[in-house]
Image (cartoon, rainbow, N blue to C red; front, side):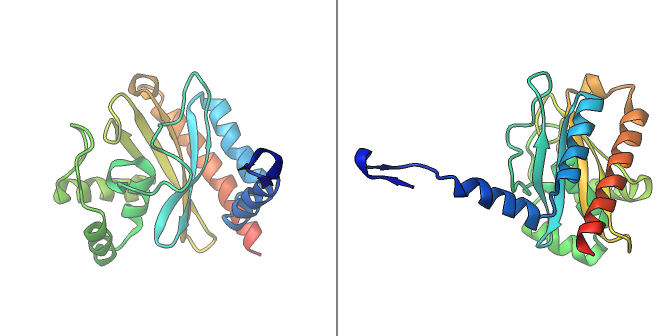
Length: 200
């Protein structure tokens, strides 16, 4: 919006409508947003939703608090370095070998921390575990001092729709892995139902 009297521009009220339209386009309905908020409230961890768009899992919603802030690089639209993030590993585990080869040719296994997996054979072994267990864990592979967990959100045909995730300091996740996994699966099931309902 142009403010002539002051010779400057500022964001207008239409921006809010544009943001809402984008969230609707991405499938972020109020019930889905409420589920991610409830995940944050029930765990005390930063909570994330990534949706499958254009062959990538793209971060579309985060709920956090001063006690457990989001990981700063994780902003709306983030989809980089999937080998080092919990939700990125969900996507990689879902790909067949040929698809994974093509994907990783575009996303090299570069080191972000001392814990980042940079050897393909090691990554493939972990991704087999992710596919078998239905949950991905990331231990200071993306940022030092932070750990994450993610589970897939699936459609009625089991196709990958997205992922829900949480992040916290590693010591806060230690000893509560089963509880966190169960909570993530509950939320993923509800988010999946919401997303499938929005498609019909």
